[in-house]
Image 1: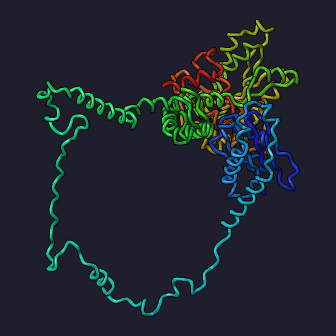
Image 2: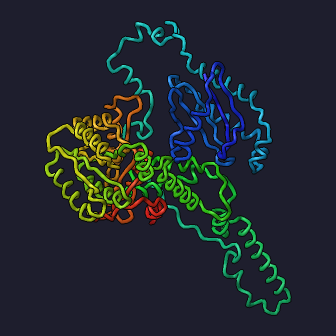
Length: 564
């Protein structure tokens, strides 16, 4: 029933693998997809990953830096997989512990992990127990049921009979024979016991040495008394009560054991609350903390490192990795490639109302002009009054900053518009054709702002993207949102997928984060948007002028996010 099972190190060395009978395809594709999309992107909060027709489950062993992956057809419901994965991990660790403790890739390559027999035994036991649990109980016969024990006499109810017997059968302890109630006597409070001092004795007479000054045995008595006192103090020290605080502190610093979920629970809870306070969506915060817990569970702490610092460093590394996703958008390089193919590079902007799509479109136009490219702006917002006039104003200002006289008499920015109330997809198609004929380098398509719940407008946006197939679809979102960012991006992507005519629909390719200068250190929206889409933040808007456009510095954002 299993398609494959593989054990490999986090360095990429396959230690052992198993392929099911009748499975001809290679499992390297699904496993590589799991590594790229989940493990490298710090998304290990959920241990299930789906790749085409396969469902993959994995488990991380942080002590020996191993990954255990099992794959099976996603149409199957295998209830024993999670327990089986744990058992294989424990069995493999116990058997090859000495080999795994040897550091170095060459030593792992030279070792021979003969695990077939153990794996077959564990798989047989897991499948057998699953079948035993799945086998239903046989139906009981009538004689075995409770109903068969009933008789006609037992079904006749006597009014007040049974209850009266029950109430009369037991005597009430709080009543006398005559039925009078006797209240319990109040208990006397405990008197304070006189303290007995171990060293000082029971009375002051034992401490009075005035009458024994001339006695030669005084020194002996004092020495004996001092010896007893030191003996008592040594007993106190040996019990560990007086120095438990110091050793407890040292035990917390020195790396003496592996991290467990219980050790990290309180620290992760504080980290989760901290992320939510910094505007990270609550669901994303929980997933991040769960991913960090799985990443650190079983890992041996370094010397003189606390649990808090270890968890904080792991979370910081995860956040940096999330903000640097697998796909990098390089617009200038892509525009030059489109020039070589003698076609315009098309960018479509989408987002909700009032986030600054048109303003940031103008900023990106200025950035492209500064790099020597000609731009055609397609006014496809035929819904909002004043949208075309706003773009015309931007066109006029940009051409004044870069006069046509400096570029051979050709304006660097032009506006393609057909007024209001027209089909946005048709206008975009005409604009792209016009740009190809007039040799424009870039086409920037401005669309109407729409809420993610507005089905007609979302359908129109999906149609525009499906018909024109732009090179880049940028979602424009503001940095002020928290949980709303997740809802917006999920529903925009869902609408694009639902209304696409292709098997592989075009989704959001990148994010433009606006109003970044208004949020101080509450930069959590950047984490939420990147985590939910897996796409990079291409630009960050930091002001009102054309120059206020920046690329995202991941480490600076994470530093602001982790600041107390």
